[in-house]
Each structure stands twice: as structure tokens, then as C-alpha cells.
Image 1 (tube, rainbow, N blue to C red):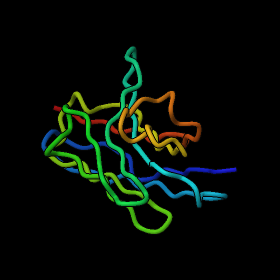
Image 2 (image 1 turned 60 degrees about the horizontal axis):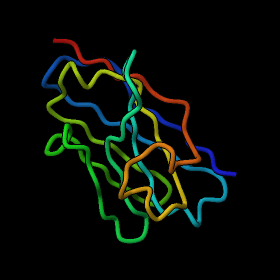
Image 3 (image 1 turned 180 degrees about the vertical axis):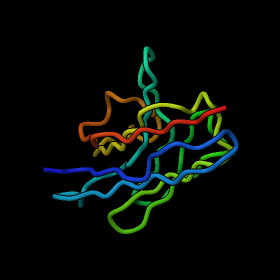
Length: 124
């Protein structure tokens, strides 16, 4: 069983930065992709960023390219969020998958393992 635990959410003014971390526990040796998703009230969950565990290649949603950076070391992945905008306000979730397509598609249905979520609020 795989468990994911996020940390690092909070409130910040527009233009500020936050760093989210996701620690992975349990049988994680075959995890192929780790990602971050977010869901704002009344909106569908969307993929934000993903990183492959083999070659560390990354994939980003267009809305965060150039502002967010996903990275990974040992059993943790980090989402550095810069130049935050009010529209980045959402609950952010860490996710993991054995699926080869997970990182490519950034589709939540490809990810069987999820953290509990951490709130990010950006005020204007």
C-alpha cells in the first residue's frame, strides 16, 4: 500500500511563492510518476505538474508553465510555486501512479494513490 502526505499549503498575496511537499510511504518502488493536481470550489480537478521517477522528466499544465517547478528527491516530491495568482487558489493534491501514461496525460483517472490535500489561497 502507498500513502502520500502533503505539507506546505497556506495563504499568500498575489505574486508571492509557496512550496508544497509530498512524502511517499509504503511500497513505492514501482511508482512511475508523481504529480500534483488541484481543485477549486465548483471546478473539476485538474493536473498541474508531474514528474517521472526514472528520468525526472516533467510535464506541466499550460496555466502554470514558467511559474511552477516540480522536483523529486528520494521519497519526496516538491512543487515550488512562484508568481502566484488568485486563480491558483485551490486544494492541492499529491498523486502517484504505476502508469506509464500518468505523467504524459496528467489525467486524474490514471492515478490510484492520493494524499489528503493541502489548501493554497492566493489573495489579490
